[in-house]
Image 1 (cartoon, rainbow, N blue to C red):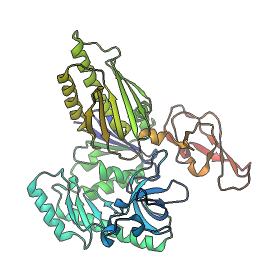
Image 2: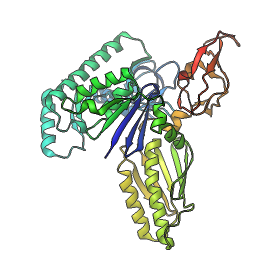
Image 3: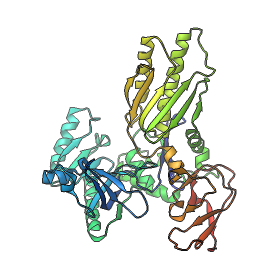
Image 4: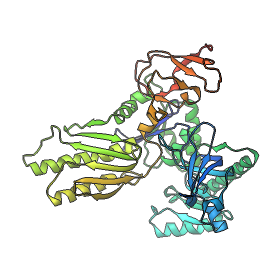
Length: 467
């Protein structure tokens, strides 16, 4: 099995490639990502839903926190009403557990987790946890005993799957690093006023090594020399026993953009289209909304069997395999309804569901099939793992999609993604100005031959004088 990781720090994009096919795309967008830590202030409290809104900064939407996510405060005071745990304008340390959607802010918690390659440090949980993906009872007993010895006082640790058969010295060193990181965050929180950003998980190379690098990776290709040196340091720190380390990491030096060379641009553009045509003639329609995705399966020109019943079953099985891939590559989350082609035979429906369950097991987001309705609709849910590609590459302003020639505020310009070439200059207005026509800037966009997908701030060449 040939498994590669393609990293482009210049474009803030990485991809996992397995058997020459892109399996997952990771985009670093620098705004309200999972694991980011903030000092926020309580803005509003709603007793009817036992929740509150927390102001994280001066530009983005306020975060949402439920009373159940204020775990350590509730445990200490034995309280069950949010008004008893927090107050308006109170300073609170929070972490993002769900990224914002188009119309909603991020979901927050006060139960801070500091994630490493092998361990997770939980400063407010006095417990020892071991992931259920470690099945060996001897290994679980060893990790539990090691956790009792090395666990910081009044803190908790969680052993990840990657900690399996890792020597104790490496685990202890990582726990010390996470402890130093928590001490630094505490001191920074005391010295700064809310709202303030304490920690952002925006280092793409560090994120890839921590969450995606394992022994099955055959090569890592990166297009930045500076990031290459940092990558080597991180891999050597976490994998001291790897003998073929230098043969795995490679620097990409070609004149062709790395996104074009490995078809990452093509994959992203295809994932933004609602219609997908398979080689066999079957095609799908995927329409995503804020919390609901609808997928319709059509047989198209597929006809490989003289038996109509077998044809329908094969068509649906091919569509199920492609749907599982599209859910992963597009990072679709929430409630998903799939309208397969109707099959009258009950055994064919069961066979389809069994095949669908098998292909969904390859997804780390743990999709769960709820039921097959009487109308032949398959209902499933998929855990939210960051924003979907559609949310990342389609920005909105006032709940509407922003066309290319629309006036956009300077503060949000660097976070807007475009998927087509620019033919005209883009005028940006400074929202901090009180005058109606003051501080209007003109950005000259570089014309590109290819349809690169990058943030806007990578395109402009110079900013003119105010008009």
